Image (cartoon, rainbow, N blue to C red; front, side):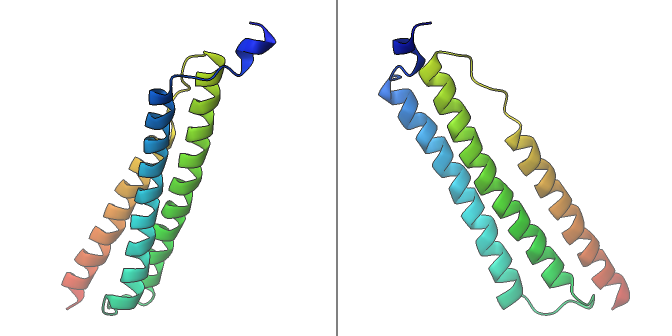
Amino acid sequence: MTSDDADAEPDYRFTLANERTFLAWQRTSLGLLAAAVAIVQFVPQFGIPGARHIIAAFLTILATLTAGLGLCRWRQVNDAMRRGQPLPRQRATIVLGLGLVLLGVLILAVVVIEAVTQ
């Protein structure tokens, strides 16, 4: 590969597709962050002290990770396209998926504990 090929301009359609994917990660992050704010501001206090804040903190951490991983992924794909290399493996989806599963389990636990204690 010559130095001219090292930073070849990829087809603009691929560049725009990569950008749309990046923006989808950022929208997901904003949605998670909005959910964290809504939990703290609008959901009534649970019978478990601090449960709202723990759920909101988890959502905030997940939102931050999602935004950062989306940025890293955009950069990796952009660099690979410009160098004509295969796209890197996607690990960010595993982090987001596992985070959402853990969040679901946490919320389910809070709901069950609330139901049992009332």
